Length: 125
Image (tube, rainbow, N blue to C red):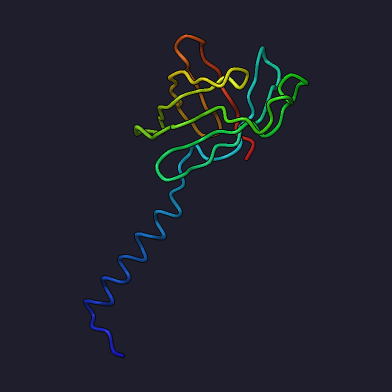
């Protein structure tokens, strides 16, 4: 089967777009170290499903944090542009979520929950 130049160009453009979208991973995706009072508290893995991002506590660095391993702590985060995201941060003790914003700057993530304050996390991987 012989393909026309136009067909080849369309196929190539589609493959290029697909490979670019795979390569352009969101900067929020990864595993992040959280801190409380300057001490490592827990590790949160943020993954993507469709156009939203979810964070799960995957490792507790303290006895208290270890109790919540496997709990979802970030839900429904969506990109709002410029490495910023909006969604809800969940307290693993009670399970309800509060509106939050996240800004990613290289290997640091700043999360702000208006009624609770803000934290800076460091990328692990």
